Amino acid sequence: MYYEMRTYTIQVGYLNEYLKHFEEVGYPIISKYQKLIGFFYTEIGELNQIVHIWEWESLDERAKQRKALYSDPEWLENFIPKAFPMLLKQESKLMNAANFSPIK
Image (tube, helix red, strand yellow):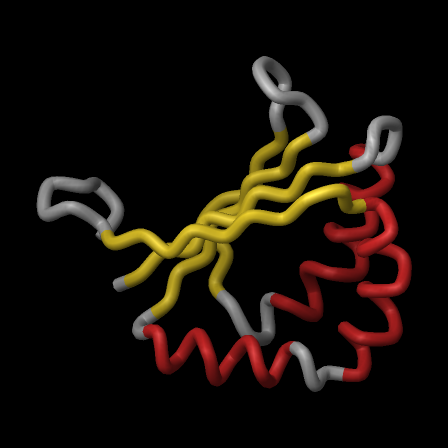
């Protein structure tokens, strides 16, 4: 199993708007293609960051589902135009679970 941790830095003043837009518009679309493990935002440390973790069976499955998402007209027309201007930075890390990890 693979886990992808995505960290987005949101423009100051837009965190709540981004969260609302993702919850109401983005999540219903993206959940057709990806399994969400957790979705968090920072309160201490570097602020205005969202961290979400997605689960993948394989890297091939990730590539296939990401391609499908990026072809979805709902994603491209209803989520991206409003969400992307609120972002300052994106980071993605693919991780493997250690043998003793509670999540595998």
